[in-house]
Image 1 (cartoon, protein in one colour):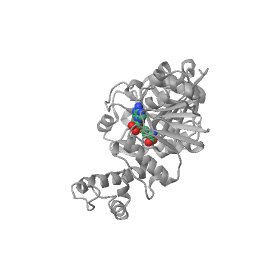
Image 2 (tube, helix red, strand yellow; image 1 turned 180 degrees about the vertical axis):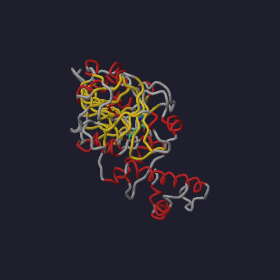
Image 3 (tube, helix red, strand yellow; image 1 turned 90 degrees about the horizontal axis):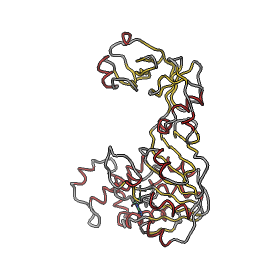
Image 4 (spheres, protein in one colour; image 1 turned 135 degrees about the vertical axis):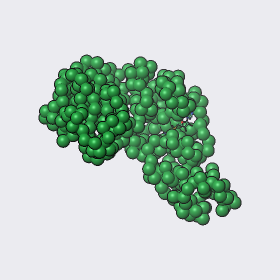
Length: 382
Ligand SMILES: C[S@@+](CC[C@H](N)C(=O)[O-])C[C@H]1O[C@@H](n2cnc3c(N)ncnc32)[C@H](O)[C@@H]1O
């Protein structure tokens, strides 16, 4: 594994080079005959990623895996959120990876199992968990082989499948993941009442509901309004309803919870802009509950395709941004003024708007370019 890297002099060298240009460092010869410069740089990168994604690993004696495994890991913050909804006796993570999710999610369990096909990666995780004083059973196998021989029942099974390829602009399907959840879903549901699967925010929720059996809950998790994860919970029974929960961590906003399918029955009222304009947070936009949010908060929508809402009285508990705004004529936009420009359902992109009106980006004020039912409108924050 990488125990040579734990030598005090090597660790001092790693810590002294945390802010060094890594390309330049890679061109140098390693000052230590027993480790290569690549191995040293891997540890530096690991510490840099840990600083922003999982600071709990910034401890003496921790070893970091290659970059790809670091990138595939969850962040401490989303893992901590998920850990609060899970508890029981036995927990298994079938796609352990670097074990960030497993470390947090298994906190409220007595017996923990980690399965991972990558031998070196699992050895690193085992070493780190020993260093951190956490007990688990580590199984180095393909999960399909593990499942074939398995006789046990688990309170919670967790999976965070890896993308098979990095092709962008492609419809995101479960078949593109390793493991293929569609192939193993029945086995998983036969050995656990709760199967929890982390998926990319790009996945389509209606598609998921159409191909998976037993979905009881969907969590859409954003961190500072950036949607990071869609997490689905499969039950061994067939639940009557699917609860969907949208959270925006570190925003101070309350969660928005609804039953999947409620959107189809919800209706919006429409209006021209009133005193307050509401922009739902991205987890809610991801959930696509455009009418439900309007109905539940007593807000009117500006246009079927502009997901902006309005009211004359402020609805403080709205999960998103609330701005006091007024409609303005484009003639009243002064050159060189500074605004955050938002353009939705409008022919020009923010960059084009900036150029056309000679505006500067940023500041505390907003300009929204959009459409109401009557046509194009511009709103300015007051
Ligand atoms: C996205 S990573 C998991 C990251 C992890 N949740 C974390 O927070 O560190 C997915 C892992 O699943 C493993 N994996 C993918 N398919 C597998 C299979 N069929 N059997 C066992 N492990 C598998 C990959 O090797 C990879 O390490």
